[in-house]
Length: 295
Length: 278
Image 1 (cartoon, one colour):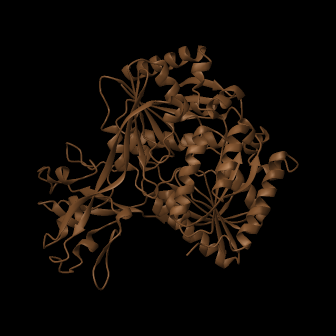
Image 2 (cartoon, one colour):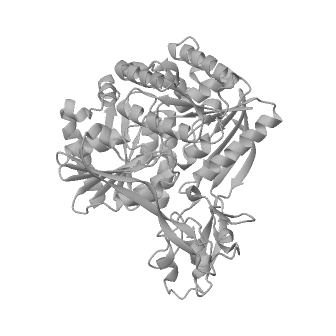
Image 3 (cartoon, chains in turn red, brown):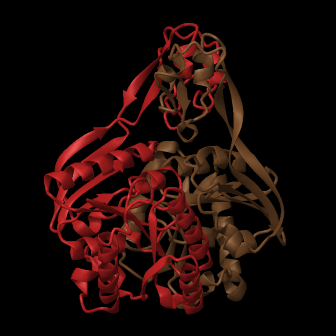
């Protein structure tokens, strides 16, 4: 079983559009939406939920106001500024470390389980899908990503699927790290802007750090052809395969408005054709074993 | 006044709005809290003056004192300490710096030491002062670095904060205690969906907010219907224009090349002030 993560560093470069299109082309891959704080893949693939799971990512301090004698020791020791002047817990700031409960002289604080979100296993027209939704104001998205990936693995084993396609979150921090560790190939979707280039380089460093084979594609390449050239030259110089250049086309937004992938909505469009080319290159890269993690 | 600029969906134009607004208003301090992928400097082209490393506190176990009682590993909620048969293993990337292990050790065998996670960078462009954080690649935890950026806030300035993308911990830390959060969205299903999630988070946090619609003209009208139904003020619309996209791609803030926009960003800022003072 192979795993492919679509990532970008910079947000809004087209990760989800491309992931959904690859799902249609791959047939029978398992999809994993690892952008758990703002997931969008379901809006193109319309999953039917089979199983819902509570996500208990961290604990929450609860103060028993009857036992509490307002000494303020907890407030002094909390490193997350999660205890207010009136000695109440700010649930958004609390990271569930348990220090307050351990040091409270009146034994007034207990740590309780909190449900920080939900994980789902679902079925789509193009394969099974693992996804999740972090509840508003909850933290610990990295742990939820790990749960989504576990669920994807369970689905792929059960359904005999040999590929997991992961839609990664933007950035390079904890949820992204959780989305790329141990995968075979990371496809970085970039755009030919100064920010796109800057963020691409940091995303590539991240893949190198975790020994994941990088591939690059440039989305909306014709917005700035000089920058596209620069990106592709940079890739060549660093022996990174550039797998495609997708043009800007308003049909992509039209397809999204209609809740469809560009492959379904406009199969003859230049964008759909280029994504098909990218898919062929990805498939051979995954097959050739180049995608295997380096020792 | 402290204004944050955020959005659930990436690439809607947060940085563009933050930088163009900063350039149109005087006496500005611009903080880029997107420490995973800081981009404001790529539009602002500042002269950089200095860099300061940022550290978090992590445990250091004195092996000579350690009795291997495993209390620290039992205490740690983040699995950063693991009791192997021979010794206590520490995984620095998982540590949240809560200090609990130090408190839990009956032998005082644990002290805290500094570990670098990134850097603060200071610069300026004209009247705009810039501070941004840059997380070291491979470091998972953005929040301590965001806190370090926000410590630089100068109260007597017009502070504009460029937030990271999404709705989880880094965003929450960034918009916390700001006077108003500008939500930049685009009129597409993804834009609307992620806007709704962000609105829920901000309501829970009790941070006032208003919307800027970028790339107006693409997609559909549902963002407008939603804002109307929820009584969310739309303070500015930026139309989709290829020229704006091309200028952005070259790293040029469009209000410089299209001067009538400078006035629009000034109006945006005074609208924000009016909402904050209400």
